[in-house]
Image (cartoon, rainbow, N blue to C red; front, top):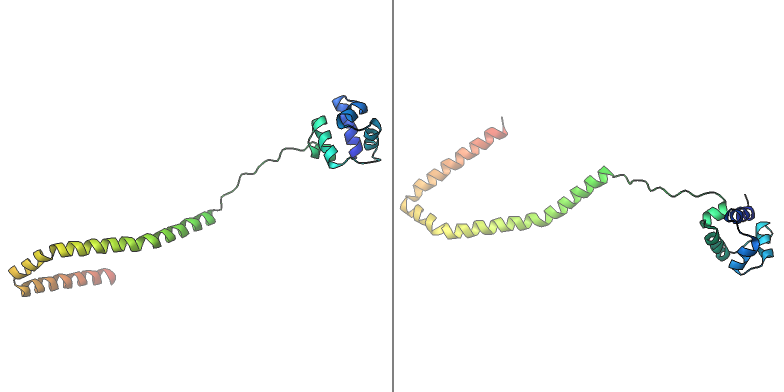
Length: 153
């Protein structure tokens, strides 16, 4: 259908005469007739007014077809992008927090070591230093053997 035929069909469905439509748009009946016969075309502003008068959208008025509402599709989740986002954020947060956590732990270990240093020195003085050294060496030796057995099975 042409625009003129669409305008005429819409006017007829609304039950209006050319004179009534012309009066609402401040144009003559002959102008409405020329539009409906496709001799001239209304401008976009008049088409907007006509769409309001006829109770149609501008697309329906121009195309002559009933325009269906656009149905929004559900957006799908990109699993790989989500996984990459999670890993990246974890690494960024971890790279910022791990050094502070390590510094915090080192600080407390040094603090505890300095607090208990006199106690350790007393123990070393009370027992013979050689005995403590031998005990520490045996513990270290057994620790190394344990690790070697677990690494090379």
